[in-house]
Image 1 (tube, rainbow, N blue to C red):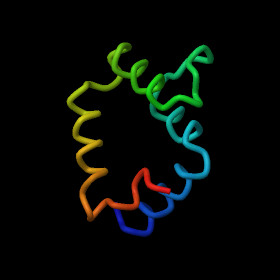
Image 2: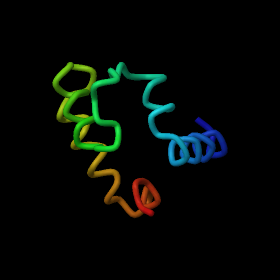
Image 3: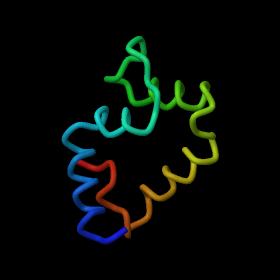
Image 4: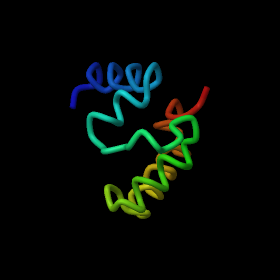
Length: 72
């Protein structure tokens, strides 16, 4: 993926995370979308992502190269 496309995805995600997540994952209406933990629990519990994938993403978040992810 080219850097410009990656930046566009990041901007779209930061503006409307649920729209981006809904393109890839099935998140039912009953999940509290204001609670990121609830979304992650649903994704793991429903088998859409593994705990290992969540852990990998969280470790990337702490990497200076990806420092802008998840930080406001």
